[in-house]
View 1 (cartoon, rainbow, N blue to C red):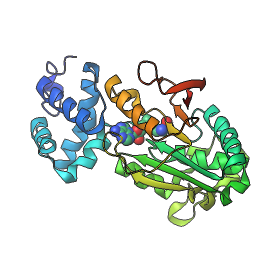
View 2: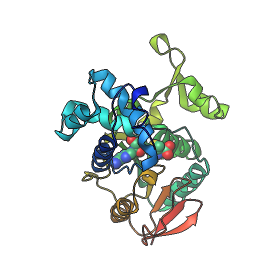
View 3: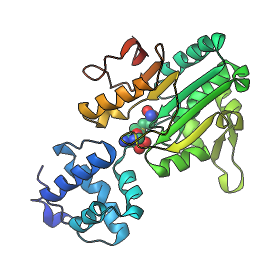
Length: 278
Ligand SMILES: C[S@@+](CC[C@H](N)C(=O)[O-])C[C@H]1O[C@@H](n2cnc3c(N)ncnc32)[C@H](O)[C@@H]1O
């Protein structure tokens, strides 16, 4: 990676040392492990912050973060996290979810679900909609979905439940009509998730690397496409903490390119990226 050699073409000086310092700070604050190849991406993500703050040097920006500038910290985290998500992403998980909730509901109507790393909310809303669509009576159960993310901007967006209409254009008509309301006035061209589905979810900002002020135990945990950026050590700690928040038989659902090999022995694989606590 020859960013230094291309210095003259870059708007801001970005040395190898700057990258190493940023990499360390990103790791400490988010658990995200930036590889050498991510130098250019890192430059691009943070260059926006330097521009916004009218800072001309990367080292000054890094000093700001190093000194724990609280106002900038949220922007720092937002700049480096990847928030890509969509409604009913990896849809087989939601088919499984509806069956699992049905199964649990035959024994107990108290069900706790956690969407950890929920980004802008499409995942927890897909959870709520899948359940209510399959089991309308679940609205009367003691069913709660906790949705958390470390990126406060995402949590704010998620809790509003308002999206550009095109985000749901590929969903079946019955889901669109049944679970989304069309916006008017300022919200024309947007849709909002129906109140019943929103009422099941509590949104909170939470860094998975820090303490978790969450109760549990959780019947089902979704932690999809989050740990992909963490090294194995961080993943091990994280999954042992998830395991401590579940009873035997609890389910853990991870992203399509993730797995628990060499990370946790507390779960067994029971489906495509679906695990059960032993
Ligand atoms: C790619 S999105 C995945 C969203 C959703 N789970 C899905 O699969 O569609 C990853 C999310 O993980 C969040 N994240 C990254 N590091 C985190 C951490 N240390 N604690 C909590 N959330 C984190 C990011 O802010 C981002 O919103």
